[in-house]
Image (cartoon, rainbow, N blue to C red):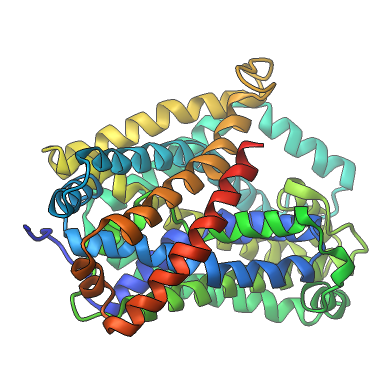
Length: 446
């Protein structure tokens, strides 16, 4: 098989790239409110268990396909399927993954644009001294302003695709090496600040002292789904990165390192957010509005609140930026595999995502009453169906391909853990991870 033209320059670069793809809205926006709605520590405990049993094995499956194929997702799947004597239609899984990422990035860019607006507002001191009603009304007015939403959506997408256009080594690797350590530094600063507030002890109790009566089937299903969503598996993004993976790197060690880094971001973000929320006596179960309404209200009442709120939204912007960059790469890689130059492929992806993103941006104003399916507007559809249905479906097919279709020797070689390590991974993914992924898919469909 032909080799990809580029490789990550080091083992560290690969880990930071995959972590960059995984760490984003799922950790800093979604985890706190989902944990808040599902019992705090009880949710966290089950979530970590499913990361080990579901997330890591499927992540390894996705990466090893790319590593074995050393091509874009479609081309790697087609070549490996042909080698195994399997159906050539497996290659369409790569296109499905690109479509999934396309849908996710279209709304991701819009929501990430909110972080730009809120960062600027925080730096300007807009929330200082504002009442809860004023902050809530300001957010509603922002969502109802399509011009502002489109401007921030466009700016964020421009920031993202400029880096992608520069390539793996000059673009993605350089930025990941710079921004991922900065992201963790900001998180540690926020967690350190949280430790000085009156809400720190209640936040730790909320996150780390489980109340087992809070464990319900719904909490378990939510934890399972979040473990899948947060590691960015199921969209062939990690397959593209596996193609760039250094030959000498240990895949299991890399996957575990990414999972640990990913969980640590969620925990640090949870500590920072819930400490501030509890310090102000507010409700940790406020749902999606926790980030853009509850937190500005809470910070507005604290000493140096504007400064720390600015740090928080800078952190959110960096996390979503690195994630978007790393999610856009497999779409560009797929088009490159079809014969387009990288610059052309990047332009096609950028324009397409921008156009579809407009539908999400207009969903809060002009298209608010346009509800084409299940009574949901476009934003609600693209922010729920791709993460809840497409990702589990893609992950299920990826796991089946790696565990049941790929030639055994290819899998053993790509895993790099010897026969006993291969058998352990195969048994876990066949008899634990695949059934769990099927449950996640069913939950998303119901």
